[in-house]
Amino acid sequence: MARRYSMESIQTFIKFFSSSRTNSRTIIQTTSIPKPSLTNQAHILYLHTSQPFSPLHQSNTSFCQTTRAKPTCAGIRRHSTSRMACCVSITACCDRYYDATFSAAGLRPSVVSLSDGTSIHLWSPQYPNPSSRRALVLIHGFGASATWQWAPYLRPLIKAGFDLYVPDLIFFGGSFSPSPDRSDYHQARSVVGVLDRLGVSRFGLVGVSYGGFVSYRISELCPERVERVVLICAGVCLEDTDLAKGLFVVSNVADAAELLVPRRPEKLKELVRLTFVRPPRVMPSCFMRDYIQVMCTEYAQEKTELLQFLIQDRKLSNLPKLTQQTLILWGEQDKVFPLELAHRLKRHLEENSQLVIIKEAGHAVNLEKPAEVVKNIINFFVEPSSNNSTNDHKVCYFVYSIL
Image (spheres, rainbow, N blue to C red):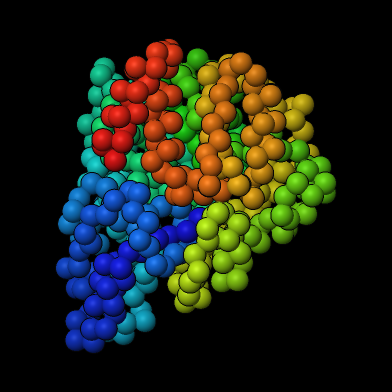
């Protein structure tokens, strides 16, 4: 996934990087970013993530607004008061900025401790209203934390009438578990445990990539609680033999981990090229290194183990069929999970599913075609029982009007 910066964003960074008389902390506190359009394509620099840089909720938001601090190198960089420009981490600034975006959307952060010692960090409504709003759980994929992958979707989904619950999966963001269990079942049970604590009895699910694997397991474990499911580029129908057969760009789990848990700028650039139909022409290594240092070094071994468990001994015959209506969204040119897996999943779920293939998009379809993705999500949940074309037109118009 790639992180996009507008010209205004770059100019802002240059201003506080070039200052030698004001410490970096003060600069970050007083710097603001103009509101962009979700579909604005005037971007000149990218970093490895999955969402546009600026929020959709405010036209003028301070970088430093946040309600939590992670005990990582990112946190150290954020609070640095060094006078040297090189001590300011762009990635850490973005991380703080996304926290502010979630807060501005009316979500609050919290950490829920479960009985097995697992701690799940999540964002949930400050004032939930289950009587008039439907609960929707957004589950991120590999890469950055939940805030990076879901920020552009907050405003349209909230305006469409959803109460959003956005957890960090274990070993991502602010979530951790002492358990040696690396299965997607463990991730699923942990998310369900958090929802139990919050009193969320019925909910819809949207999962991107690895988050789709977890969403599938939640739907399997709690069929009576999950209303509907959206799986975005989630290769849940893959088999362990697919690697050797050449279905993917990598031939073994070790190579996959080297790409999805990058530790070198070259691998991060390779991942960006794989996930986008039109990858950026410029990817400065200094930005790549900064992102890896802040977002990819912590729990790298544990994330590798998550991948290993996901693939080993995986058979389609062992995958249960979901009882919920399922929307399958896929980028037509996905190179991480090829389109064959989308058709395989559609055949597996049969009449309980619908497949939407988004053209001119790859694995990062949620970034390349955000308007189309959110339109399909809202149509799927807002008008679940209607095939009336007039109603569909009204919903589509509503979605585009709020974008």
